[in-house]
Length: 92
Image (cartoon, rainbow, N blue to C red; front, side):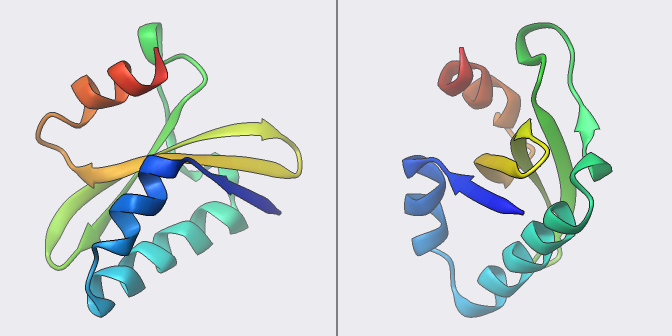
């Protein structure tokens, strides 16, 4: 499975501490193992899937898009607060 990342995803991931990075890596591995694990979104976010996971005891969301059978593009991640608003701005 090939993982592509957006520049904003890379910038956000660089700011994480080691335990947070390990939680994010576990979420990315879960998506890589089963790309259909995330919830498919409708409407403005059609084609985007969102995976929920815990990062330092806080619920976080990771947005990604399945490009083809061998490629996944990781869009962004973060806490639920204002997540969908920011995701709509970056995708649309």
